[in-house]
Every structure is written in C-alpha cells, then in structure tokens.
Image (cartoon, rainbow, N blue to C red):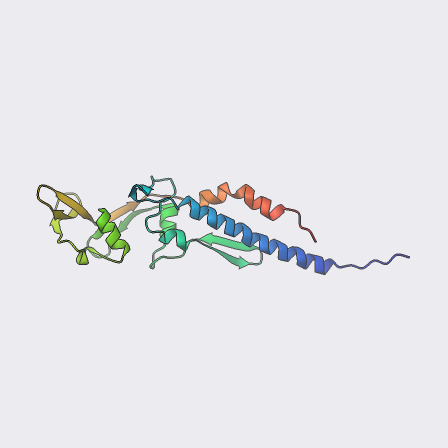
Length: 193
C-alpha cells in the first residue's frame, strides 16, 4: 500500500515567499528604468541637450529627482515606485501631472536663468547672495529681470515671476506601461521547488 503525505502548507509558503521576492524584483527594475529615462542631462552644452519638452520625461539638472526615486514594499504582494517630497515639495507629482499657476507666496519667485544662477541655486544660493551685483530691470506687463550690466550688453541671471505654469512631463506612468510585459514575465515565470 502506498503512503501519501500532504505538504500543501509548506509549498504554499514557498510559493508566497518566491512571489513576494519577485514583486520587489519587478519594482526594482521599474525604478531603474525610470531613473535611466530621466537620467538624460538637461544642461545645455557638451554634456547635455537642454530642457525636455512638455509631454516628455524631465531631463536631469542636478540628479536630485533621479536619486529620490524609490521602490518600497507596501505589503507581501505589493510594492510602489515613486518620488517622495523633496524639500517639502511634491515635485514628482508636479512633473508627472503638471500644475498650472504655481504662485509665489511672497511677491515674486526668482527663477534662475543663466548658467551661473542655476549653479548658484544648486549650491543653495539665491539672488540675495549672488556673487555678482544684480540690477533689477522692470518691464511693464511682463516679468521683471535681475541682470548683470556689462560694457555693451547685459546678462539675465534671474526672472522674477508672480506665477509659473508647470506643464506635465510624465515619467512614472509611461515607464510602468512600457515595463508591463517585463513585469508579467517576472511574476509569471515558472517556480521551481
């Protein structure tokens, strides 16, 4: 007479553990795909191609967004890929969905324009501690400028705006859609016991 022994609970536990690992593997692959999608340098010149167009993924200026992208387990069979708030602002959502009319809370926002101003802002600087003396140029009906006067011309370093329109530059949702086949492949591959 043949004997039969049931190991269903152990097998179920092995399958659940394997699927849990695969969920995190898929999340990590999506995270890396998102990082590579926005890892294109946004700096103008030899090392970059400039700002992205609305509707395309954002280009990297200082890699803060790229470094902030995370993959995190929510439960045994659920993981999320996203961007936390950076300096108290939800840039990921603003970039993904766009936001019309971001208004300044105090008068006008100083938006860095020149390479020097962008570099200065990336290092925590503002127009108040800019290394070059800036002059304010008022333009009726338009944004004021903070400029540096040179002999025969002037250089715009900052634009002073009351509001800014941020158009969508989606990067998370399109990557998830592109990775759908790979995610299914990871999750549905045969499990060997």
